[in-house]
Length: 390
Image 1 (cartoon, rainbow, N blue to C red):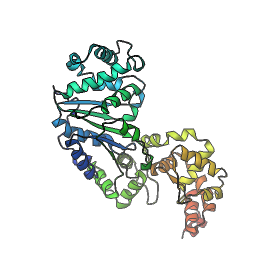
Image 2 (cartoon, rainbow, N blue to C red):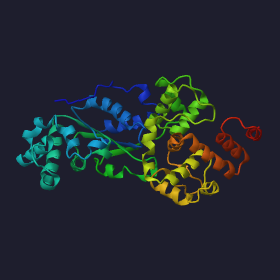
Image 3 (cartoon, one colour):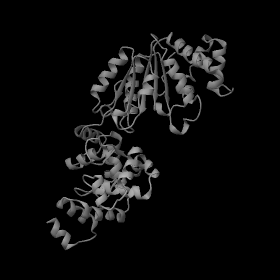
């Protein structure tokens, strides 16, 4: 029996799906062809699901059975949901191969008709999932595709991890993706790697280069962009494909193109994605971050000079929330992702932006920088500002 579900993509992914991922795909294909498993990780929007779909479309051709689940945050509280997605359509074909206690526990968990729980039927359920995979593998190679592992319901994650660690020489490959933060040093994927088969290769998706971002934008119809606009999109997106495409879309839908040096329009979808953690900051801390986002090279000293007297504590709190990156070697303040700074600035009102630039126009030490902030803080035409800019 072959269970392929939604795998209707072409055997080879479209060119725009693998832009900048050639080396990763080569390593992944070699790993999967050798019977190994793969764990793709990286921040939101970096292309994990895209890579997973493309690799799954290729690997499904050599699999007898393909099992797939894609978890969501809103459903992560539902026990056994991911397990139901994986095994719900195939359990009837292997149930007669399972011992009665395992079969009863598994069917109860998958159908919800009983009261099966990990606490009550823990061992039976764990062994049942392992037995089901063994029975499927006896008929031919099995491919398990699981996206967004971070949202797997705990019960399914525990059962899948138990089986994965015990697959041994069975022809079962796992192709999974998990969201991790932007800092590659955090090793947030380690718990998921420990719950994967022993022969799993962990691969981090890195940001695209400027040239790759330009190629991606062109493939998605955003043609005719100037080099400076592509540069701004790449800088603001941090090389994140989803962010770059959303910025490109916002530019295309904007009635007017921003002038050189102006901030790019940041669509509401991206603002919500990157600014949700701002709700945990006080209003004063948000103003401090807004001043930092308006500065070219913000430091705590600059923020103090701009009137943000609690800047040190407020930026430390923002760093603990993942909004700012901790700079160990320099006194500078750096946002964890460029889009956080851009979205924060875009979210502010015109009056709030002007207030930030007014503060920086007196705090900045560089005369050119002071003049720039003074110009951005001024509405209309001011001969004195024009003279300073000249």
